[in-house]
Amino acid sequence: MSPDTQISRSPLSDQIKDRLLQEILAGDYAPGSRIVETRVARELGTSQAPVREALRDLEALGVIEISAFRGARVRHPSKAELLEAYEIRAELESLGARLALPRMSDADLEELQGYVEEMQKAADLGDTHAEAVLDVAFHARVIAISNNRTLERVWRHLEPLSRTYITLVVPGVDRRQIADLHVPILDALRGGDPDLADVAYHLHFAAAGDMFRETWVDEPSASDEDGDSTADARRGNAARPARRLTATDAVAQMRRPRRFRNSAARGR
Image (cartoon, helix red, strand yellow):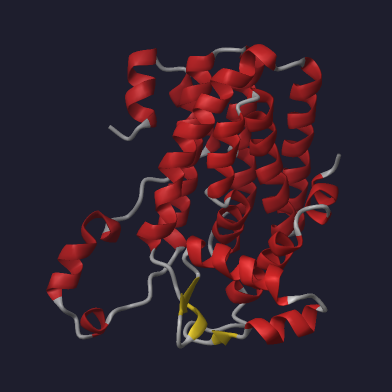
């Protein structure tokens, strides 16, 4: 089954959420602007129920806020908010890989290889949404092979497609590099080494996180605009240039002795 087919068969609320997120990130809804539930339902020719569910999911993602009297309004999530999921996904997906490896067939590996190749093509064509769908299909397939339903539910609650799309759509992100970062994961899975897979996943999300950290711009607070030095102190390490980790770096790290690989993967 192709990723496009999977998306088309996804719940209506997910499709509405995906569309609204694209419009928010494209600037069709500016920060602070209101998203009217009835208007969206009318424009999409649907009931309000799936729109309401989509808005709740977007609130959990941090891109809108819902209040009793103001309704749903667009907000600009902070870099820290959006980066939180990277470390969690690294832990969850490395566990998923450990559980999946004994079950993984040659056909599964070929399917994953296909996702990587299509992802690279989408990146070269500048098709950001297709790349995000393929990216998540790759990660979702490994989680599915793990056959752990609790893990899959927790993983899906992290909104992987929405977060991946946010990462890819930020100006300055190297989308081909994001696609290429899946190659070390695939190599580790082919090798059947759970420790190597663990390192590959942690390096993957560290590199993606570094790239996002460099490019996502937080909205300035009033104190920032006034040059308040305390705001700089609060930002701490976020103000420093991020370490850039490439796919080549990831392979090199994976070839280091294990005790060094594990510490490097966790940034220690």
